[in-house]
Image 1 (cartoon, helix red, strand yellow):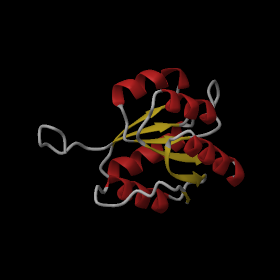
Image 2: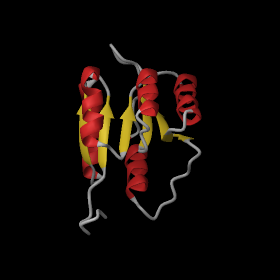
Image 3: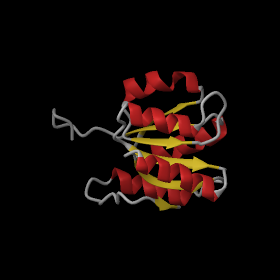
Image 4: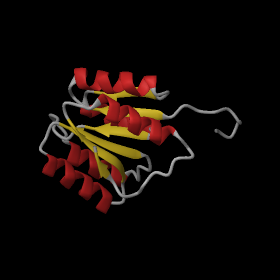
Length: 143
C-alpha cells in the first residue's frame, strides 16, 4: 500500500530490443496485475528508469547500442532496488554469468530465463513477486 492507503500496482519495465518478445512479456505482466512498459530503444532507458521507478525489470542481454551487462552496471550505479529477471536467448552459461555478476554487484535477481520464453513459468514468477506475503529468496534461480 502507498502512504495514502491506496494499493499501488507494481510497475514492471521490459528492456528488450525485440518488440515481439517485449510485447509478450508486457501482456503476461499486465494480466498478472502489473503496470507494464517496455523500452525498445536503449537510448531512452535512463529517463524511463528515473520516471517510472519499476519494481521489476526484465532484461535481455544482447541488444544493439547497449547490452544487458552495461545495463546491469548502470542499475548498480543508480542503486536499483527492484527485482531483475534476465530473459535472453543466449546460452545458459552466459545468462548464469550475467546473473552472478548482478548478484555480486548487489542487485536483486529473481530469476534468469531462456528464450523461447516459458509463459507459465514467467506468470508464476510474476505472481510470486507481486505477493507481498511471499518470501523472495535472495539467492537466484534459473527457470
